[in-house]
Amino acid sequence: MHGFMVRPASPSIAEAELAERYAIRTSPPVLAIMERLWDAARAGLDPEDTEAGLSQHAFARFHGLLSLALLGRVDERSEAVMADCEWALGGGTSRMSSAAFSEWLYDVLEGWAAEATKMSLIGLADELLETITVRGSGAGGAYKLRAPADVEWMGLVRFRDMAAPPTAINWY
Image (cartoon, rainbow, N blue to C red; front, side, top):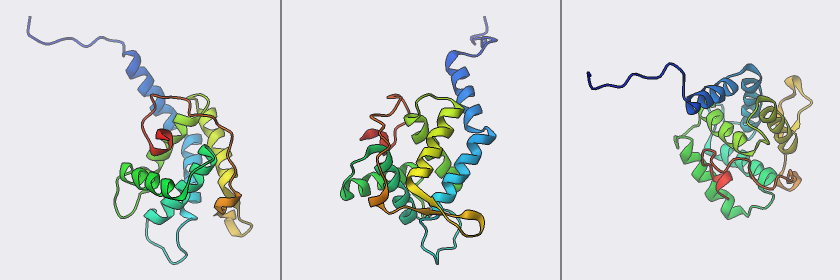
């Protein structure tokens, strides 16, 4: 024998699950809803902020609304700590890229969706958009973030998968 193992011809269950997760994450409908959520998060930027990416302040604002929608009860201090943790998990740079935001938010959606299917993820994302934003009436119908007092808890009791990748939203 030569001291090495031959890899089996069929992928393991874990490899198959990873491949399925990647296929869902990169499917055109999921990419489209992630782009809409990115646009909503960028609605939290200060009007004079024209830099690429998302500022930490805009991320914290979006995160706060998301927390209210998913958790229903979050005090201001706890929310600030959770947003800081999420910012660090997302890379912790001066600006968050669209790709880093999508990675972070996909993990959140995957943990809270009723099932790990494309339709369940898209349905939850659409419901979140409706809960935390108001569609603008101007050209392009840009998103406007709701005031925290106008965001209602979506009624989810707990996230779906205790083994989902950790985020501050599912540590709560």
